Length: 147
Image 1 (cartoon, rainbow, N blue to C red):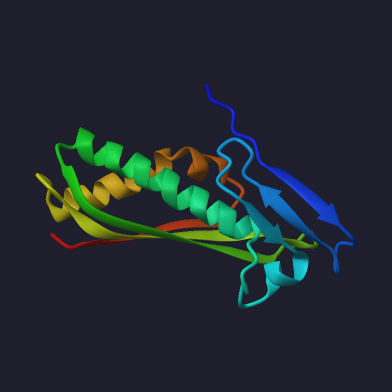
Image 2 (tube, rainbow, N blue to C red; image 1 turned 90 degrees about the vertical axis):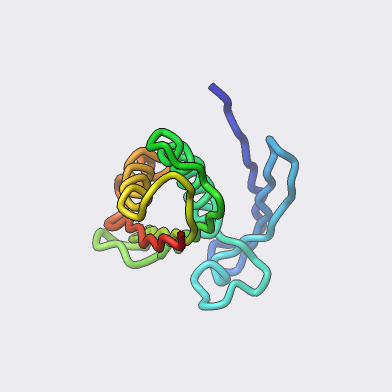
């Protein structure tokens, strides 16, 4: 199976330092990261591991969802998937990812609302990133069928 690589270069201390994360395998870009921006309400042009995880979860889920829809006889017509990943306190100390909330809006031909929602639940369980997040307290999926 494929291996994908990212690299982070860091300068300075944990609280005051900053780094750049590079998408090495694809070469699509290098993005700034820092602890202060990671816990701030506004990202201010700096990404975080949680945002990168949200991107991974939304894209992985979407691929799994389209597969589930196809297996159920549906054809995806329009889908929009958002993942909101929450960083919160860890009871053992420090912080950890506490939630990934997936939001699905869209429709597929050849399938009804119940089938659409069932496919979303199956994708949530079967998505490799969902499986990787087994230590997260909550993975939710909110589905709106617009067909």
